[in-house]
Length: 208
Image (cartoon, rainbow, N blue to C red):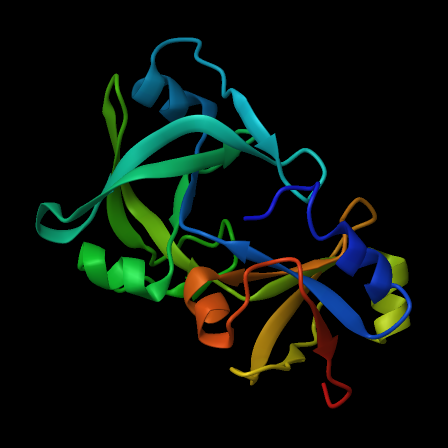
């Protein structure tokens, strides 16, 4: 996922038209403090590697190995901070195939029926019986931006990607909060399909 120091120009442009900046979200992990201590040792605290676009969010220096079906694993999966009230793994569909999993498409934290997955750190491992999801496409925005776009959290948005690999993405959930910074999150599979690298401003379509 791009850091807060990038895509700022796209965000500024978006405030003058119906465009939304793109953030590309690679596979990552969220953890509780208790699970972090199992993985990295007692009283361990996440170390900030780089701030992310949304306030308070950061890429941590800490990484884990995620282990799926029949010991299929992906190493070096980054933890994103701060710590959460739940632990989960967000993967792209191609990651899921590599792990032998069939995760549901869900909002972050909606883990009922999520796929089991194991996290392995330098000090221990944590099995999540319901832990792996493919994240719902979503767009962060303030209430003022949502009003300007004419959308609410019950809507599902569409955006048009223009270019050599032009696409229309649908079923994008608005996430509205006064502290959010305008940005739409796509996983790496969606971004690669459209030739996006992050930071581009894409067009929000009118026919919601």
